[in-house]
Image 1 (tube, rainbow, N blue to C red):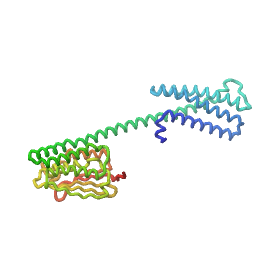
Image 2 (image 1 turned 30 degrees about the vertical axis):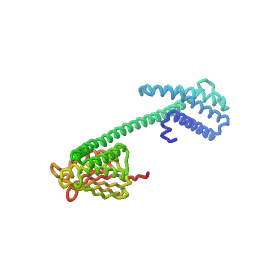
Image 3 (image 1 turned 135 degrees about the vertical axis):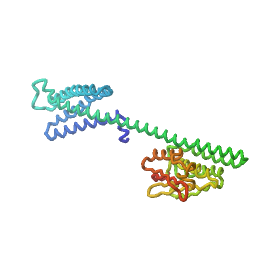
Image 4 (image 1 turned 60 degrees about the vertical axis):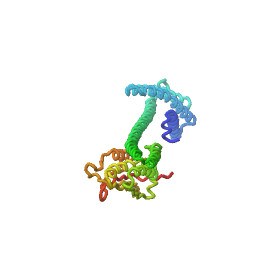
Length: 355
């Protein structure tokens, strides 16, 4: 059983700590008795005092649990009164045992002598109560922290799913529009191929969890499905170049993190140009960082009305997904491609899939 599991089980933790605490009290008293050369009968007094102290704290626990949600003033007042009452009877019992079992040479002359030292017993009960409150507050704080973390995680998951699924309608509209054009032009075989590729791609997107990461090899497989669909649409106007490091294919990346970047490049770099253009996909592992780049030969950011928008939906969603998943450990940058075009660069920590 882990320490976290122990703290979650409040009832078990109470009994364990209470037994350990009063055992420690008995051990300390026993060592003191040895140092002062007390008679052997005194050790029975120590054991009985520890057991009675253990029993005396049980009503304190019940009282504190019933008053836990009340005001601090009421809880504090009840604590002082209850501790003094328990200490009074506990000290009386300890003195009775000491005088009657400990074979002490001095015997009390008055009844009040049996409650001598009650202030020390009162301090012991106050210390026990302080430890009880401290542990209970710690448990409550841990539960609140866990609930907050779960709420934040749920919010992040909802936001990431929203960002991921926000990409699909735009892509689906473009693809269906292209297939419709192929059918109208009588290219039924080509249209069937496009439908088959679209089916495989959508199956991949629906089966993948936006909260989980996949290998870059799997991501490139999905990207190939998408590009085959677009190749049906653009033909020789769309040229694909790849420069993928073998080690990088085993790196873990967010699912469908590259598709919106490719879609953005096709929209602004390939579609407006009669000659089409080239898309280059680059992946390297450099100094513990996975570097991904998508480059195109379009007008770039400075291309006027036809220029690529740095705040487009695809780029913005990708940037926000990376921020949610990696925080400051990631970098998402836009830069010029030589001689023309745009280069989108993603830097994320390199984590290798060992499955």
